[in-house]
Image 1 (tube, rainbow, N blue to C red):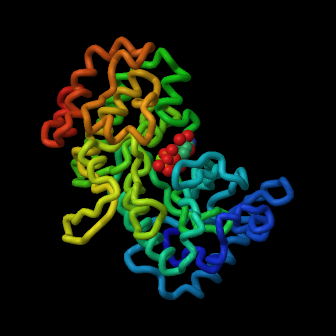
Image 2 (image 1 turned 180 degrees about the vertical axis):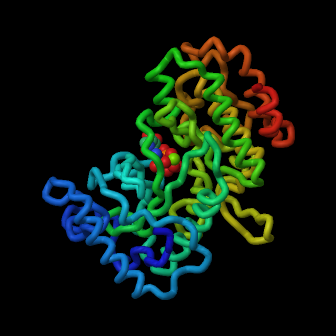
Image 3 (image 1 turned 180 degrees about the horizontal axis):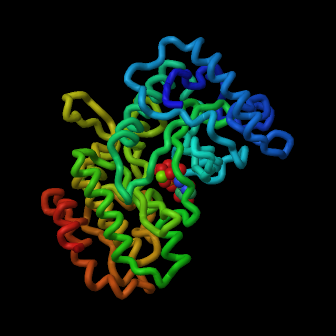
Length: 359
Ligand SMILES: Nc1ncnc2c1ncn2[C@@H]1O[C@H](COP(=O)(O)OP(=O)(O)OP(=O)(O)O)[C@@H](O)[C@H]1O
Ligand SMILES: [Mg+2]
């Protein structure tokens, strides 16, 4: 299954976001979409193998450097033809992955939303390449108990996206905030330590996450926090995809808020627009996530989006008094979080220091 020979679904590049219509879906069975209400994994999967072989043959100019990420398309049965969740730029589908040892596991398939702006084949190819580059790094290099495992990619026109989907374990507990609200007595410091540990690992690999927020911390079925969406902000950084804001405004550090919408020169000397995230901006966001885990709700929820940049740049920070239900563990850890959200990036702790202080 590991060859990456099938093209991105460019054949359907005339699709727009309206491709969620049932008619377009029912004409594709290769992804195991339920047909007539019944799921027929084996027949669907054998059909899709044929389709895969044909597509492979017709796509001789596969983008270079994408070998090594398993293509899971033919191993997945979609459990719901509609997406089950969605964020700012994506849809989440629920599926069943049939593994080679005969076991089956629920998976989330994350696809980048087709905005209708993404119709040009060149643009889609660019997006696909960036997605593959980031997911390849994730797949081959990130192996840590607090980083969600990437099973591979899946590509099928039944998904309302112009590029491949990323296949992850399905996390029944949802996000870390959903978890602490459901299990209010759960200890918070171990959860914060788990998030820190995952981020420390990413930084130790000399990478930046770029979109740390509570919605990107999922809970494993065993109750461990898992960082997800590594590199998605870079994928969305492809010129022309929606706005220049690829990370979430609420978690942007002051130095990023300051240049919001302005041009900057990146480390390769190239002019860019957007949010040049760094390890220090990840640490800032980690501090906010820590406060959210302790308090059980989002930071800055009383501040209107429009006012957030001036609020944060003028020293606005989470306050213990914002949280009536603050966990008692807060006393031991709040001072550490405060250093993480220092205004000056150089004053913030590094993840090495965070980990050393959380032991
Ligand atoms: N692997 C998964 N298992 C279970 N639920 C998931 C999984 N991945 C995502 N979700 C659910 O889908 C929601 C949306 O996730 P998604 O990553 O698309 O959006 P987001 O993180 O809110 O925003 P963004 O588009 O910036 O990433 C999450 O908040 C979570 O509830
Ligand atoms: Mg996310």
